[in-house]
Each structure stands twice: as C-alpha cells, then as structure tokens.
Image (cartoon, rainbow, N blue to C red):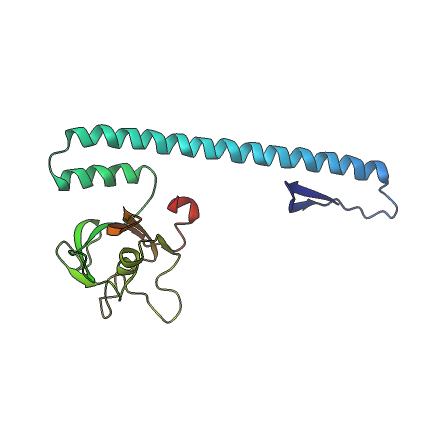
Length: 201
C-alpha cells in the first residue's frame, strides 16, 4: 500500500493485493509509491483545471450581467436579468429577493421567480422566525442542505407558514456591507443537498 498525499494530508491509499504469499518486495513498494504520486498529480491537475473552468464561466456570466445592466429599465427587469445569469451557474426552483424594511426587525419579499407557493411580492416577515430573516439580520450567508430534514421543518419566512411547498435545498446570500444587510436573495430547490460552500463563494 502507498499513500496518496496532498501537501501534508493523506487523501487516500493505493492498495494492491495478491493471493500468493510473499508476492511483493521492496521494488514493488517503490513502484506503488511512484504510481501513487502520479495518481495524485493527475487528480490535482484535473481539479485545478476544473476550478479554472468554473472561474472562467463565472467571469463570463459576470460580464454578461454587466452588459445587461446597461440596457435594463427598472428594478424588475434588472432582477430578471440577474436571475437569468444565475440560471447559467445554478439550478433552482425558486429565486427570492428580500429587502429589510427601513432598518426595522422586519423584511419584505420584493421579487420572486419560479415557484410562488403563496409567498409572493409584498409579503412581510419578522427577521427572528425564518431562514431569510436570519440571513438579513446576521448579514451572513446560510446553506441548509434539507430544510425538511427530521421532524422539524425550518420556516423560510415565519412560523406557521404553509410547509407543503416541497422545496428542500436552501441557500441565502446577504446584500450589504460590514454595516449590515439591506437585503438578501435566496435560491431553493426541490432536491436536498444541492448547494455547498463552493456555491456560497
């Protein structure tokens, strides 16, 4: 057996077995170590290439959004352009833009694209009861792999909301600066586990 090492971490093991006793010697161990090093190099070259490809795609989407901003007329058209650009990077069944109401402890749904499930534009919600309020109040991104996991269904906006929406994955991103969030947007999907740390970045 030979370890697959990345920097100072062992990320795996290359293991070779034989039914015959005394079938391997020091030369075999040295060869296994060389193959393990080669496998690790290929793995990380592939990973680096994939990350560069993703970064290139994000950059192209960003440039496209900047181009669309120049021709946008009004907030709704601007947000529609934003969601169209997001669709090239993520899959989602519901996009929501929420705003904080005048630095109060309340938010309002400003824009929804996709599944409505009774929570459309103009609905107000307290910041202390749901996932979107949590993002707004704390000015921090939030990922929930499955909002319906276990016996406790996490509300997206307020306690007692209709939980028959069928949406499972949630990611919320605050909009603002170090002084606080004035808004946030969220993406939701019916399938659980769809967003991770890379999506947040």
